[in-house]
Length: 288
Image 1 (spheres, rainbow, N blue to C red):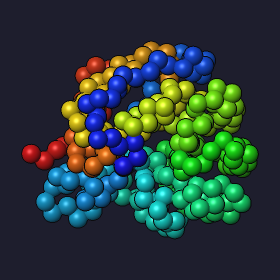
Image 2 (tube, rainbow, N blue to C red; image 1 turned 30 degrees about the vertical axis):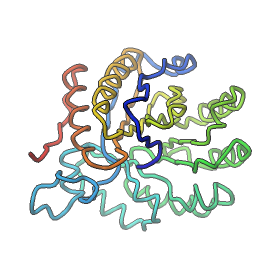
Image 3 (tube, one colour; image 1 turned 135 degrees about the horizontal axis):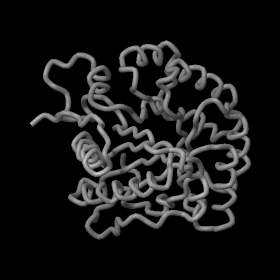
């Protein structure tokens, strides 16, 4: 994941911003212990180096014994048929969850314009995951700007409400004009769409800490630097705060600019959550 990569991560201020004041109203004290799903972006052997034991024949089947979720980026590049999602569902444990990315034909080619047929096709396919479908997410191209706000409005109105959705907007102009930012977040909150937080070295503006639902969807991008671990420590503390405030779901997916040790970072993060927050999440086994 090259987006937000920098050549000098040691010079970046990685401290997490304060929570957005309007996020507080979406919490509910009724939730004592939220669901936490942590995973990588891909399960391929070439992406998760030194993770699969020798002789592993089915990468997804093994991956799903080590993690409870996957941020499924493969669906961005290709429209998989419904049968493929059904096969993936059958290969994984009952408590495993998929978080598939919306196909680029919808987000980048059509740019949400006149995409209803493709949306219907995509939704039908991912629905084959049934209860193992965690949340679908839409990542817009960084040149999709506020001038196309009407397309975003039409898309979220058309999106089927029974399929949980999160969206990531990347163009800087969504965040450098307070009135535009408020209008965007109000739209997402009204339609119960989760606003994605991106923790990446080169785009700190995407870490706006504005939650629009009682779910947080975090895309964490390590910089292949020692700071990757201290940044994760900070996230543990922030998640503890959110749990105390009553957040419902925490979805956290680990990337790196160069995919070298995402499983190692994930294992560290999961262990910290277990030790400090009292969870009993599976810690992935790592090859020596």
